[in-house]
Length: 364
Ligand SMILES: [Zn+2]
Image (cartoon, rainbow, N blue to C red):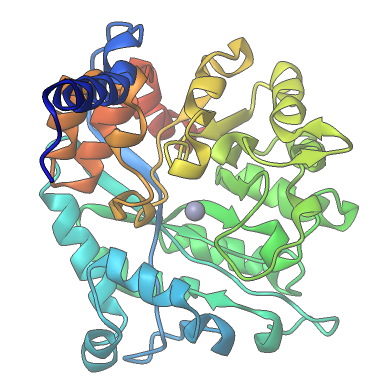
């Protein structure tokens, strides 16, 4: 049955109204002019790799993670399949990463992170409780093959030879040390780590450590990522970079971000990276961090690659009000994940100095 004429008009009016409602967020947002990108090279200081142990890399993932949808998801975002890795070795992931980065117009170098495991009461690697392992030796051997990559070591301070491992990492070119306390079972406030912290400070290795909740793994002890636990490292003179700027979670009934902001006012050696802050589950987080005066001269550029490459997780279409329709369409057409990330973060208000701050921290 054909609709009568008045009904016809009503349908058209409803459709127009719906279209207007859909476009409203793109049209109504107040946008500030972006700050320019720097002339000097941009370094992404927070990138991941993954490995299954293929080619004798020493990497592994737990059986649970191997069977979970998350692993397939990660591998896809690295642009590799499990079959390819098993055939060509774990170094393939680094080759693909380096090749994709070489196509970026803006980012000239990336820091790829090792990931140490849980250490048992005898000081040995606890394989059963380690979900994801990327050894320093693997990266130290492979990274020199790629001139656009640097590497970050990961040394669990509970290893009996932790200090020697830090020396080794520095000698073999590591530019920082990475912790994921909630997954590696490290309490940053543990006073036994004072010699470790003093060693980090003496070697000039910044400590990049996860802050806030962690949802990338199948389990995590979130309380270990309370920024308030970083006080000891800061007092020992370590340059600390709070990964993801503690924008998720609450500790002692206070937002994690407030704990970090409070420490920022006390310690000039504390920084925070802006990796993962444009993910759909953190849509408002970058704006929140940029609006806090405590963070103005403390933010560092990182991406949490490969997560920026997953379009369902990070997309300009999640910021219609902030970006407007023209930029949203333009940014979504950018193929290179780093260039898309930079375009978005620049338009969302990241300041010029943020892009290159990491290099100045390496020599502190
Ligand atoms: Zn990360």
